[in-house]
Image 1 (tube, rainbow over the protein chains, first blue to last red):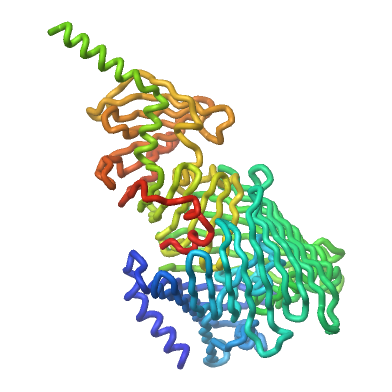
Image 2: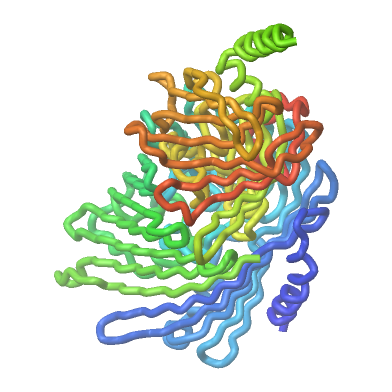
Length: 384
Length: 246
């Protein structure tokens, strides 16, 4: 009932704000998406449909105070919901402290879920910025793998979660120059071992953005740094983070490092190559289906189960309204695990997009190398 | 009488020649830009069977600093672009992320239009990145214009081989600009019209960029408002302001 209440309120609110050209004190925007998923495996085809609405509400109370509330409403229907035990639980799993979601199962194959993934207040002046509540603290620099993103790392496979997860946290930031700042952030948790507390210093030097971080992330002490700059006309970015367990919990020291180079041709052809190293990774790991799933369950330490992961992406505008692309993740090991992600976006109307997306995953199972997962997605998105 | 006319003519010619082509371009540039300015505009990509509109607000200081906020369409609203010298960043509010853009992106089309990123954030300068010379004066829709040929300096980060500007002799406004590639082939034509009063200056408010290869398509920029010399300082063009401007 609660879910329906939220959905209902959402739709009433749209006409009130959507017309407004200039954001005044209150601004509302969001989208409505419908996505069909075709999941082929062995000789089966599962079909699922996801209706997905997002509402971003911002209140610009005065020149020093803002408040934000963002809600994600989803209705899952289909074979996966019906056949995967505990699917409803899986949908609702996250790293958050406060439970800000409601869920309702209607029959065997439908789940309603409504979740507040941003709810924070912000106070600021010229130099200072303080944010408290569920917010995204984005410390990552690279496109695909972000070892510096201690607070809310995201999964590249979870493409339908464009906004990426947030954290229940407080963040205090002081700007010290046009691209330099010092910030402290901490997540809220009753269990100290589950908290993340860290500081970051950002500075711009020699045409590069540098960042340095130190703190604790769950049961590790961490140190890290990252940079974003360029070599000639190509972008050159990197991040590394060291994890040192501060108690005997069975985990080992780990270094996670990622590096990337990207280039954009005049013709709109875009290329991005990236490499991730995880000293705690292995060759024998199996990237199970959970790896495809939920950004909310990830931490930097389990960004990839493999020691080395490589990424290549290209995209091209075939027409001003049509962009096509291909992303490839290859895990160099005896298993030769490979992930292929072709995609195309069509702009049908000024605020209506159609996406065609494929996710194909090859791995070796019982000495048999084959496509273990073949997923096709058709998504319509109306933004308002 | 005849003599007087002759003298008058001579003075006019002398005065006319007193300013170099470069000085004319400098006047044109100063008028459009001011030391700092703020503008609101709509860009429309026009094709025979469809069109798309992007609305934005822009702030700039000289050619070195600029900030652009996308205000529409809904999908891209809130995104911002910051340029300082030759560094450029993109702010994506939905994921709380600043992305440093590779310099190669400067020459790419701006959001699928016939303008490049460079056209929008004006990294290259019509004054300092080119050498200038007068060609034969001309007339465009009844207005007498200077014709000035701009040749890029060897080390300038400019994509064009040559640019020809037609400039209103009285108002110092560009009315027509032709862009040629290095093989001297016409690539783009920019037509400027709808001269209106913007913050006390008579300026063209409608810019149409038409690719020579495909004259049926164009990108139109229309200025809704513009303010000049608004006292922006370098520190306005910062990460925190990129997130704050509305």
